[in-house]
Image (tube, rainbow over all chains, first blue to last red; front, side, top):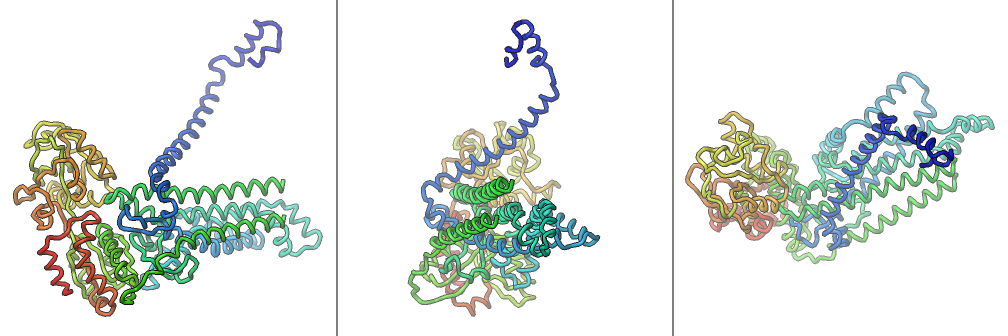
Length: 316
Length: 321
């Protein structure tokens, strides 16, 4: 009825209204809109159902023994007071360190080289395509690579080092691609301006390109970190421990554990889900572990989005 | 711009420090425990995921006696376990079946001698509602009812003409469960091969990952049929059906399962690397503890059927502890 003020004549208004709002006008357009809406609805429905189910599953564990659960270990029985995700969190923490220490610098350096130094020839385009394909390779394949490179060569010893490096390699192509895209998005006026006042290439990269591309690079790296800590398949192949990891007595920061057997959050979850067939109490424990992992991943993703938005606003 | 980056780096550093502190606080337990005999060492166990909980439970109990010994357990499967065991990567291999000839040859080729130790039994109970008229089922009956040929049959008679004409509601574990695999392996596999069909279950039963839901299903229908691990069915209000594996109807109970009379059960073993046991006192002590307190306490605690007393005595004598 927004048009009712146009004319004083009620009959004219009604006719105009009918012309605009009448049934059947732009039926296809509206149908398409509803189709899109229902797709969105369906997608969020799945996600919400999953979240609710995991939360209700895990809630008893999280509400009753929140702190114990974070410091506990893998146990044979779900009723054990010492059952918890402490060892899984420690492993995942170290995997994150490996990814930050290896894939971030190497990936960003590779992206800078590809975008700023490499000349556009056949070889670079082959490398470019290869990196894109590597980003799409299933994660189990990286698990096999890790098994052959870091486990089989060390007398079959599955170590945190093997798991961490495997996951670092897994996300490396993603880091390269996102960083390269962020660098490509730097306006050429910035570069040309800097060159114009006599800056060297290194100066341009250091003072113009990297700072400008930083938010994009950061978003990409955080997203790839979130991917790395959620991967289970490569770690299963590399040989993460599923049933028992004896207490080591040394703290989280002890470097000894890098060349020791390990477990990680996704492995703990997989193990408990399997155990729940024998001992049902592992179901809620797995649910609680999933909630913890989800919170970490969502937290990381939202930090990435928030940072990007803040930087973009500043830059704009 | 640079100030923004610096602040960002500070934020990241702060987050990392916080998570370090939080995690470090959580992992400083267990190093104050007193060590009685001062025995230290490392034991690594791989193999069957079915047996892994027993070895894990034994390790947990052993930790109170010998806190200096680290026992790690993983469960990739019996076959994978033997591969690692026979290449000398593990000290003990958990197994839900006996070692195959090919695997034993592998071990021999690498100069690995081993001792087989029977540790417990995994029994599967076939059950129905406590009002059910069914008393005993043969393997053939079970194959007709639950095997792929039973697809679509909604009454007992439709699946197997020797059985009463009553509604058939089947509840069992899903394909992800070890109990599902064992049931197929022990009951269905041979008959499926004879009938020339795939060794699997019919698809139109009610699978559930939770034993409680299977029991609820069994209780909800007077002429239901289902199967779960024996330890779980034993304590529930359902009727345990006798099973005829060729030697007459046998009711499942701890005795018939321990004596292998009840046909749907399988033995659970550990295989110990003799050479490593001789040179690693920690491994020797762990296996000693396994055949002593382990067989008595741990096996039952994690839901399997403990050995009968005379089998335990045999196992202990064979290990020589």
